[in-house]
Image (cartoon, rainbow, N blue to C red):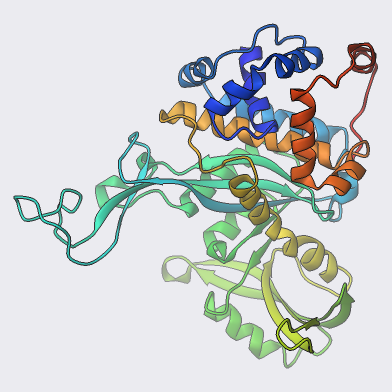
Length: 426
């Protein structure tokens, strides 16, 4: 089992595009010899069908549990202490589509109707996928809610995944599982795995709701949630009304090449639920910023502006606004960037690797672990200069080509493997 799962993780460390490619590349004599030198457990590399068969029959959630335990070990060793926000661990949560198909592979897939217009009709008057006769076809898709550690130095570590599944929806009322329901399940798991860890969650505007903020408060989590202009109108109304009175709630600074002007209002009461019987106290902060860029058409300098607003779990002041907004909430982009890397830069996030539900999830968890190991390597003091010189993709190509060639000298490698070592992050 250990050998097979190591092989599965290495598939994604070396960014193999498919099971077939992994079987072709990693079983070549030179590659296999290099792997056995570094991983003595790999006496014989398994076939990719063996990995698929095992993942189809084991509890693949144990793979994610091992992934979480590795991160918990690094937390205990205080590996991330320099990148925290007032000793709080920043976690971003966001959802993304993993796959879409016109045919269903398992009952867990979600479904939706897409398309419009007149379709070819079958003998009953409806197209084969359009039994309601509304000119739309059924489409089946996978959606995953991801949680990542997003540190201020740019290091983003995959942490936990929650799959949306058809059975979690309200099938009696024809309501499917959704991102918000998945958040409740993910939050419960996150609290169970890190019950005493000080956490600040970064969420997009979808989560600017009373129940979500209430869950964060019950879990003793801090939060920074994007507040869109049309969300929570009563909160916005109170913010605009009070900011004329609270003249001291302002702070201006320069961050990089951007001039920033912050303004905030604390202790806004937000009422929600039936008959507005529940109340939360929230704090709103708005950042207006400007910067100059060169217009690519005219080559003249132009001034650009942007505006950001967040709901904060804790009161804002001039001493913490930079940390909570710039070093914290603004780094929510890290999870979007991480998902994009997994989709477009070698990890093949949208490739299923298996049509079976259990094995597909297993490959997903192995992919996230492979990505985690690569990120830790790229930010290690031993390798960061090499990564900066070659780029991330170039570094992984270099690693893969080194394993594929006969470059490693066993007389030099073995003593290094036997010597004690420690991961040091830059």
